[in-house]
Image: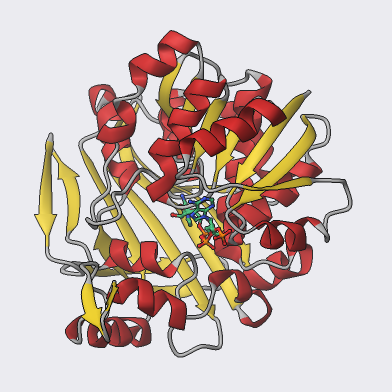
Length: 395
Ligand code: NDP
């Protein structure tokens, strides 16, 4: 039995806490902590099992260490924002706790994410005999595990990997992001990048698009090539095993892109400080205040998400095409946990990652990405906690 501390009472934190509470045979104690404890209390008041709450500013390392030393969790599940990753890792090292997150570190003043900052903690986690598991959401997260699963079971070499993410949904708002607006907009307005034959090739934002015919009644949708963090780790760990090309695609509606274009053109997505009436503001942070909170989109969001990996490669000398994916229905998620599917599809694997570490099914001292472990025990838990997966071999 293990104790887990979830940090961040947002959309993902709410689902992750519910799911940790459901995993009674693994987590005998669950705590949710955030900057605003009231939000934690609201979330846990709906959960049948007792879940403790605490107030913590995860950027204040001594304060966080104090909480960790008094609660003594085996594993800390960081579902706050990417800006907090390094501070929470520092606190875990000091207090002796394993660490799990869903998004790699990003500095506040630069729209740029990469694993180097967190991979640099490798020796420190190793010396302390602790595990840090990075990127245990859906993408990154399940997509890394899907790829490792395909590599282990169905391919000798992977020539092309396309990670394909569709949110075929309507949330009733003219413009709303389905996870933290600041992080989401920083991601989609950045330059694109993909991997081919040992090199990364940069593209302009949204430069490449293609139409993909999605399953489960979703049908054809236009998707755009983006740079996404799992490409960095997958190419590092799987290229030596024969991965040659890797791309990430996400669908966007014309309406979303039209709004984004205008917001960019008028400077509302800027992340540098601007003086307004004698006060310094960051336009993107101000915009976040005006946009709907993703945690409140549940009741109105209808439609499905479909996220998976489309893989071309070779098995026993023959060409093979393979598609593995999950379909998640926004309203089903809302009925179960009062959340929309993006928070759900992130919160469930976040809990499973914490479960893998807490049970020792995934163990090791150091900093790890998802594809470095055996995918089987993780794949087994996905349908149990609400994310069934489908495999198709394409002729
Ligand atoms: P939200 O903005 O809804 O929630 C983030 C929460 O973090 C807020 O409730 C906030 O708390 C808390 N927080 C922020 N700063 C601090 C701090 N210094 N100390 C303590 N708590 C803090 O975001 P989401 O739930 O949508 O996303 C959570 C994470 O999940 C993000 O890192 C996001 O990038 C990641 N994500 C990963 C995906 C994947 O597939 N891998 C997909 C979607 C999201 P408070 O309200 O108390 O101030």
